[in-house]
Length: 364
Image (tube, rainbow, N blue to C red; front, side, top):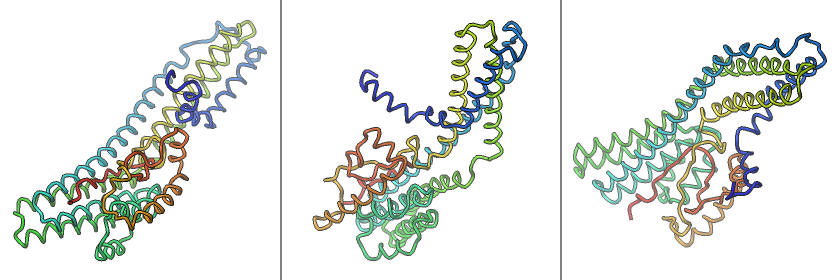
């Protein structure tokens, strides 16, 4: 608070679970039930005194709801953690394969391996969700990193539908495997070197496939609906019981204010955990909480772009950045005051999956 000030702190609250809870229909129904119960109790409509209220009436359901919410959020976090590990494994497999290529292949072959694996990596995230596609990520990154300088590479890439994702990245990995197989046939590498390189490249395929599997197998609707219904039903009953404190002989603070604060805390915590679980269970979108995507490079360090292409690159960069600013995640970044493009290369720093590409391993 001392560093950002009260205004900055209030702005940061808009990126928490509080706005989502405030917009929830369950929140307002709960508060309405509390107010209605308090008004009726104050007017003596229930015909009871404050001594008649049993504080243990909701103890059993409270314990049950605590267990349900803890299990639900834990399961959602487990999904998020496994998908993040798949992202980092994909990045590591590309890095390891490029290192093996630099140590064993010729300059021409390792350059092809580097290009094909980076094409496979970035193509894997296009088609995974609606966040990234050929227009706003694949074409732009290929232009910046010079991944398709030759007509042969351009022709090959044009044959695959990048927005389909799985078909595209598997085809690019097959091209990289062909390079290694050809080097083995010419006797340039040993059988062990071919095996290590092939296994490392196939690890990239396995990691990206894991991400697609999580997109295909979503959380069961019956499970999420049961958790949401149990939470909403509990809050409504809890609100009614809290409103019963406001009897005709009860004081305002202990009969209304403190029960209202207790209800508010329970509502924000319960519904907030539901929102957090829903967000982190699928980190492949454009929300501010999702996994980050690209490592940034300084503009003057971008490789493979000559002076004649600089103007084209900057025009393309400006067009893509304007398009990416329309996403919800980019608007969140703009409101937070984050710099578009970061400090490394101006590559779009949109919110979404971590596409950790490895341009630094390109052969000189």
